[in-house]
Image 1: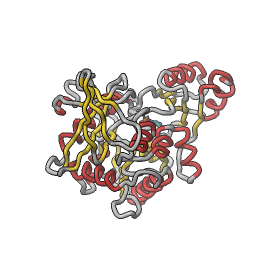
Image 2: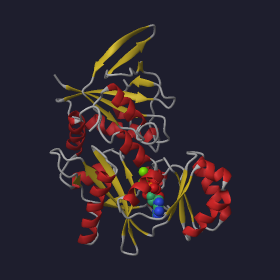
Image 3: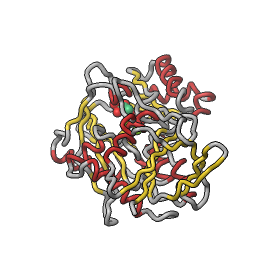
Image 4: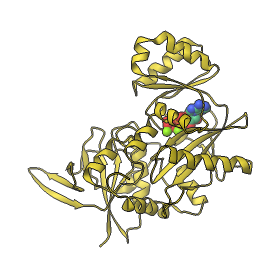
Length: 366
Ligand code: ADP
Ligand code: MG
Ligand code: MG
């Protein structure tokens, strides 16, 4: 029989639509001779639905982003030892039947942050990607930075702004931020797709910093402020090895933000002509260092399956890790699949690899 794969997408985070686009790409490319896909959408209100529409609709059309509507049959999630969802149909219900692997193609909080991974652990489901801790630590840029520092992974300076500090010790926080000097980036600690991020040209401009922190706090009560790293932006794909060895690392990509954008913000990422150069045109020793640090970062955070590690190649000639993403954008035109295509693994093979690492995953502690 075919291997049954639950593809879960949408979700409650601001990256709902991007997740839908990712799912559209994956579902269209999956090898249907080997796999039976069960598409499961999570609507913005958190309800789970069996997605029955054409997956071709999960795409950006004329700048319009797709979303999960609550029109399909609703699903109930069991909590222990059963990868068997219940389909609710009016007053009756039926079992959907178990599945062999789960692809949680979700970005952001309640999808990429360890919460749904915890649910999968409870269900004994074999899912693709990072586990509970690695997901949580990679989603929270403050904990992520602490782990980078603990492992000697080069990264830029920052100030953490937890909710209580912002409310109770604002003057001290603003002084710490001013000490970063120069341009700063103000971010929700647990976000993605650049949602809620602002660039502030002068760290000592208290009014501008305050406005940026308030903007980030609309998405997350925990904020991080980072010193800008002037330089070029480079990304690198990492995959868990299939033979238990060191992770595989792709050719890096350089990002070219489209004209008219100040940085790689949401619009520049998805709705502009921003482009990639793969492999990145960098000195060989810089490429080697980036690939080495990508693998080290993956292992330092305890990642599994896949991740994309993002870098700055600073004007000072040094390499900095900006962040790690445990469920990177995964449409056929996204950086992660493009980097793997340039490294000899095409999109369908990459999806296959993701499913294979999920199937190999032993439930429980690893
Ligand atoms: P997200 O998780 O939302 O992608 P990032 O930390 O990657 O957040 O920030 C989004 C973008 O903002 C980056 O791709 C980059 O263009 C810019 N950026 C963020 N932090 C810095 C920094 N410290 N120095 C320079 N540019 C930055
Ligand atoms: Mg990110
Ligand atoms: Mg990023």
